Image (cartoon, rainbow, N blue to C red; front, side, top):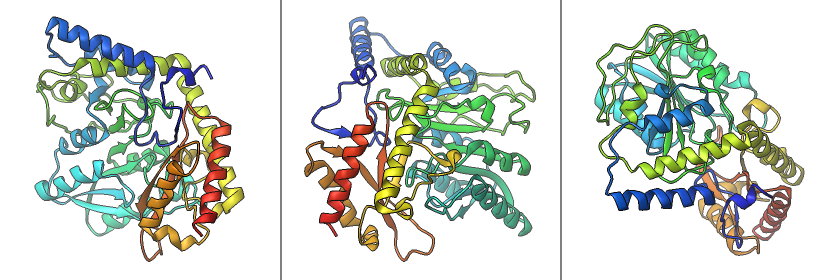
Length: 414
């Protein structure tokens, strides 16, 4: 209850779409207002690379300030990461068919501009998945491409996917990355503020996440982790990478050991005069999360999500879930499922949209959820699953009310 009082959410609604937008706590709103007024009063600029803010935030994510860049959002970070790599014609990136446009758009630009190729792994859905499922899918695809004489250069994946809430396992997929000597790019839009990850220990080259979703910072803020030194977690050489949108450029060659040769994160964080109150408020939100305890928050979010998944499985059957339920390494606080009694109705986009709209309009709790369309292996059309986010301001009573309302609506729409 004390945590819920940090927020000023509209009590007429039950917000369960944090995966699209979070909510700034009152303290961060007050700081944002104070800093904006201070800036206006002193007619101050925002030149710099936000090193003080990066220094404050970085420890909570297990990296050094030179590896923690502040970006505009996940999509911005993905553009920085992908378009800064020194691609050559014929380089292949292996990714999935459940990626977000924030990652696919810069990939498509690199296809047209640099002549790279993209190979899409078809994603399974539902509970019948394990960590090994994904390791094998990527490993077999890479081996197949190499056998064709292709030059596989990078792996890109979402952890979790925004479509189904499947948490592609970073540590285990990094084993595949390292075995094949690849560049690793993670769309981690939902990770900051939800999962208590140590990114230095995970070792990916790039992880782009949102500041405004589960981390509950202001809009137009994001976190981009860039590997900038060699650690035991990833002994591969650092990829050659150039900043693409910056006021800061170091010509120092990238390090070959555990000591950075330049502040690579500065080149993403610095671009002209920045609106510093946004990033100061994000740092405050991160400090709030650190004070509560990131592992406590992760446990709370995942416990609620497991409770929700269990209730869905009890009512609709486990096959209604698009999200994994039983392999903890694949679970996050996003839950996607098919709410329709006539299961084929999930391929009807209009009906799925109506379900989401009616959850808000027809029930006194005013449930805010969303849907997303995605390919299902063997299905004749896209499935438009309903997606629910569970976070700090919900409790088991909210889940009970949500499930009862969804069951009622699914009966009415049958």
